Length: 167
Length: 204
Image 1 (cartoon, rainbow over the protein chains, first blue to last red):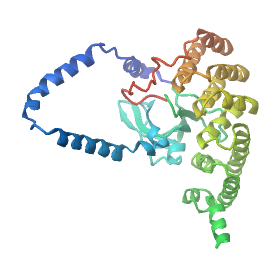
Image 2 (image 1 turned 90 degrees about the vertical axis):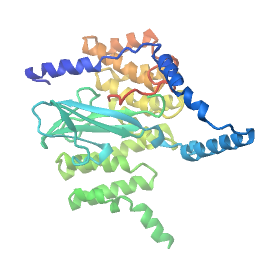
Image 3 (image 1 turned 180 degrees about the vertical axis):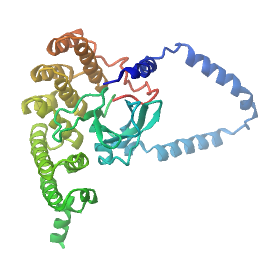
Image 4 (image 1 turned 30 degrees about the horizontal axis):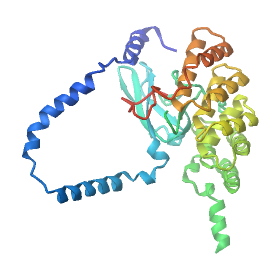
C-alpha cells in the first residue's frame, strides 16, 4: 500500500521493529551500581527498635494492600497498552476509530512524525474492530493487523484482541 | 414501582445518548434490538458499537439495522454454544469465529478443553480463517493447542502462520507445519510470561 517515496520510511520502520539485544548481565550490573550508590545513605538511617520496625513493616504491608487492592482485580487491571501505527506521509490528519472509542473520530486523533502516525491506547480484554480515518474521508485498515472479514458497511476494518492471560 | 423498575431495565438502549448519532427511525430500531438482547441477557455494548460504526461510516439506516439484528442473533448462537457464563468479550470473539465458519460444536468443544477466558483462542481461530486458512483446519489447530497454550502462544502461532502464508505457503499447509513443530504449547519462556514485563506497547 506504500508509495515509492515511502520506501525510506518503511526501511526505518523495519529497522525500528527489530528486537533489541540486551546484554544478559545488564540487570546485575545495574543493581550492583544501585547498591553501591545507595550504601552511604543506609548508614544515615536511625537505629530502630525491633518493635518499631515490625510496626512500620506491618503498616507498609497494610498500606500496599489498600492501594493495590488485589482482591478487587477486574478486567481493567488486565488491560494492555497497544501502539497503533500507520504510515501515511501524504495525510494531513489520521484518526483512530473503533469499538474502543464509540467510532468517534474526534476521540483518538493520531500524532505524526515524518509521516508515521501513531497512537497508544490502553484497552481492557476483548476483541475490538477498528480502522484509520485518513483526512476525514478515507477509511484504511491496519496493514499490520488481521482484517475484519465480517465488514458489513463496505469499508475495510481490522481487529485486535486483548487477552485475559499472558497476551 | 416494580413495573417502573422493569421498564427502566428493559429500555437501557433507548436512553443511550450515543445513539443520537443515528436518525430517529434507525435509532428506534437499534434501541429495540438492543433492549431485546438485554432482556435475554445478551451484552448490549457490541450492538451499540456496531450501530455507531455504521453511523460513522455513513451506512444507510437499513444497513445498520440489518447488521445489528444479525449481530444480536449471532450473539445468541454464541451464548448457546459457550453457555450462560460466557463473558461479553468471549461472546464477541465467538461471533467472529462463527462467522469465519466455525461450528457451534467447535465452540462448545473449545469451552470443554480450555479454561476461560476463551477470547483469544476464539479470535485466533477467526483471524486464521481471515488469513485464508480453511475453517476446519483453523478449528482443528486451535483445538489442538487450546488445552496447554497461553494466549501469547496462540498469538505467536497465528503470526507464524501469517508469515508463512505471506512467503507463499498454502494456508492449510502452513497451519499444519506450524502446529506440528510443537513450539507453541510450552509455558516457559513465552513472550507473555508473567515475569516478563512488556518493555513497550505492543502492536496489534
